[in-house]
Amino acid sequence: VQKKDEPNHSTQTQNQLLPTINFLSIDVEGYDFDVILGASQTLQRTEYLEFEYNWMGSWSKQTLKDAIEVLSRHQFICYFAGIDKLWRITDCFVEDLYSYRTWSNVACVNTQRVPDIATEMESIFQRTLQDEHFTPYLPK
Image (cartoon, rainbow, N blue to C red; front, side, top):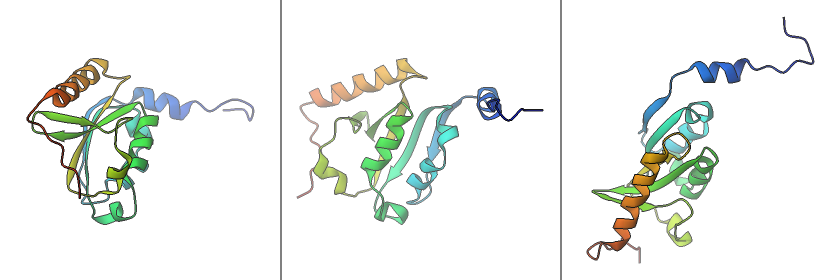
């Protein structure tokens, strides 16, 4: 029996017993950020996350900036994902582009859980910046 003054560690203990999530893909046709907002305990166990960003569903009223801030608090760094290219969003994004909405895949890595993968993703981003043939799409 737990006494009134004793801390309740049952939730913490339950999270420690749950398995690590290596890959979490969220694809709920515009309600991705809603899932992220409700997945705090799941994100604590997640190594890699992908979701879609666009103009549909709740994204019409929610911002990518807010999603990235939530994920940053869970130790994720996020990138726009392309074919053999990554463009970092976390701490490296042009403010005006947050308001531009197009169909995009966002790839996020938990830097605490899988630092080797985080380092490799950052290396891909750095190579993307060096690629003379890569031109990011900028809205008019």
